[in-house]
Length: 477
Image (cartoon, rainbow, N blue to C red; front, top):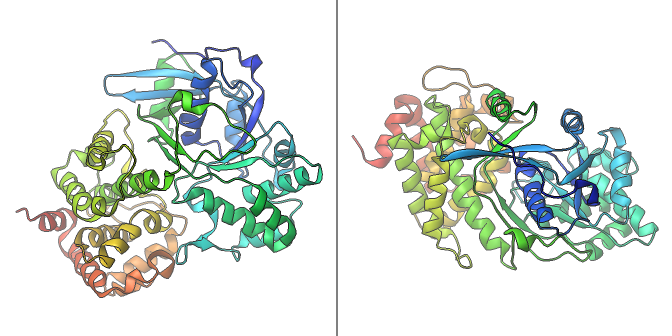
């Protein structure tokens, strides 16, 4: 089994990007696009310097530095796996308190883009309002010590301050996380934090720094023994290989005052209508993940493709998407939305990916308000059906109670798991307690039509189980 190596001289690369958050998604997405571009002999001054602001990032740094910053990416096509070594990253900064090395690197004039994948929950958003939360403890801590920040946003501010003082043009800040309006969300976090310690600097950042919105997409399972064994079959001893589906997509606003790589040459779409692509993807794909993951988890189904093979779960996905999600997705340029859903359906069913329902159930307290509640809110406002989305929410609540229908204990799977579990147990008798979480539901939890459907389905899940509840929803015996 052969391994495709970089088709360019890596010694010719010079850095133009600092990327914060070197997880699997970045290494299978942006790093691959750049690797493709470098192979065409283009944009060799846009190599990546990796960085992290959390202690676990240090382990990734150690693993990647040991292999000259090469990442193993294995594409999981049902017709055959392929493996390549991605060479677009040239260094990985030390992970340290105060982030001095990161700030110094971002202050260098040749760095013209700072990109981020720090997870959907890492932007300090008040879920009830959708606004930046300046009272978050990590934000208050950075505001008190702006010269030695702990967050990515504090480090970005410190570097922008240094560039301003040195009369160096600011870099573009490019979010690659899966958030509605991710550029604006990132702007809110950076400017909001800066305003707490230096309002003048905050005003300059707001006026001078570009934060383009982007939509990103590629399914990348977590790395474990299976993935390491795959790498070994290709003759590679890599502790951190990445596996991914063949599909990938990236849509970005073309707003890069300091310049950018020629990514349109390798399939990236530059568009003024990122919001339309983003709504389609977040509601249909990410919302679809939740629709199949929670019943799968409660029915002790480990893998996503196995959940898709269950007629009840597939029927549930098809019905909720068709009746309560797709109708509220705005038109997307040159895209057939019904056809897009069929592509999503096929991607979820890919057995080679072996993505887990547990991974898709992760962090529901951050994901539900972004991926499920907006569709629910639109359906309620326009008088459409909400029974399916109410059942999705009830399934999440039932999952958070911490035990499957078969009696297996569900290990903690949310940053707020302990509180959610206690609340989910209480909600078995008092469903309204779950919907009172304003940080999750805002005003939607008080809507009588939704609240009635949620309570009825939650009681049914406890009394009859997930399989019987899905059968009843689908009108099947």
